[in-house]
Length: 577
Image (cartoon, rainbow, N blue to C red; front, side, top):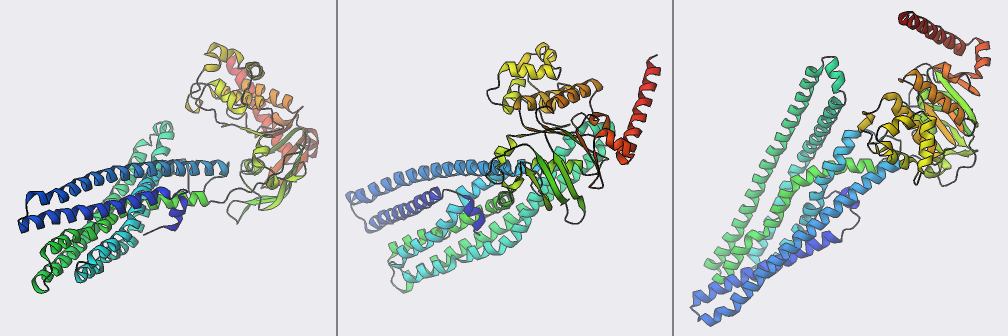
């Protein structure tokens, strides 16, 4: 009923204590109001004069006013607690996501992370602001009531207290089934969200391949599964609520019967008996309210487990040392994604100042090398060093201040061009931006289309692919890093944009360590060193001329590509004529 992991997530628990204290004070005031009502009825029963009613009526009014104030105060504390909880948890999720960096969270994609951080936190808001305070209060309230009632009639008080545990017993009985149901509920909820996001992203492709109807059926099936699990949740809630009502009212009835029996057989005072009758239900109301909050709590707890899984995920290993030098080395690295098959095997590479290229066919391990250099992955064996220092010993912030990764899908934010540049370098001067734009041949385009205040739409939809990649390069140029990694930075763009980007990459290599990953070997002929990957191993290394003279895999692949490109140019020329 109380999840220790979720309880530990809450940094400041004082507000929970405040809610419990206010609830206890409210209970005591309620007892006072009930006593005043019985007092007034007793005076009426005895036929006392009107002036005798003054004191209990005044106390009754004060009690009602005080109860109202406590209700308002309790509501405000709960609202404050809920706001703090949401802020704390979202901050923790955000901070953890940042600390994870480029490392992905197992079983958590973008849609899942979004749902957990938004909807999941909303559910946990109710868990912390309603369920937890009610949990502790419901344990304390019956004891306070027992202490009050035992002095009036110990037999009635004992019967009422003995019946109270039946409600938590029923809750525990339901909880095992409820946890399974809510775990499935969240799993299907996230699965439905993932499917919907996937369909929206690929809507163009679905239309092109006329597959929208098929995916519509899949989404309908997922929606139906979610509807069924939602109905199971509602049926379970209704059944458990009915059980708790039977226990609560049955227990109160038993206590009332004992009190009435006390009047008839043991000479119990009728007015005192009336007080016991009115208070009997109060024994069960806190636990009854806990039972109602329990279902919300289970839903929140299921979401909380996913948040705990995210927050407990291991972080990439980093140290505190500073980067000294820009010579990057990969020594004897083996890497496997599943622990069974090695994607990289005994890889040795050295990247000095200048241009170093990594080439190879698809699946040879090029992107894995990039992720290892970027710190998104850690080698299973071997080491990666910068200036002689192991990557794991370096400060992540300091390392990233020296590293820039530009790929074919480098993200351009849905902000102005100026804001995108400021993201790379705070306080960047306009002259620096203009110089970078001129280097990538984007200056005229930007000036003719709104200047630096031009807003780039989501995913760069309002500019071409070549312009997007050139803009990404310009943004990284102003960052002035010492190590640049270009991962297929010229793929899927026009020849003009490719030539501009490669010209700037070669110019950049005069001042920094530049690593180029390319499927097109014509782009790396001027590299100072080329590593040829095949099957996860370095099969050849050297300059373009040396590798061609060896007549190995690189030379054969280069000649194949060259023949295809020359044939394409010839056909294109004939078509134009």
